[in-house]
Length: 106
Image (cartoon, rainbow, N blue to C red; front, side, top):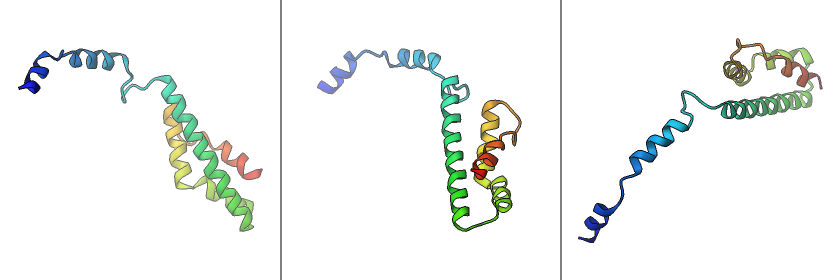
């Protein structure tokens, strides 16, 4: 009986606080600018790391620069990241290919 007595006396504020939180918190359909900026930064870091790892491996294998550039341009993960970045920035895909070229030349 003590369980029932405790549950009967417990306040039912959960519904009110949940609705208040949902009104103030960004939803997955409408993320905040800070969340978007954070995701963009993480994707850029991941993209840069992929390019650096790829170019370092290519240098060790002594692959020609033209082959490395072609492989980077068509790398499936880099293409996917570029498309995601473009979507997050509100731009057309494949406009962010310059960092790949810069990374491969260094």
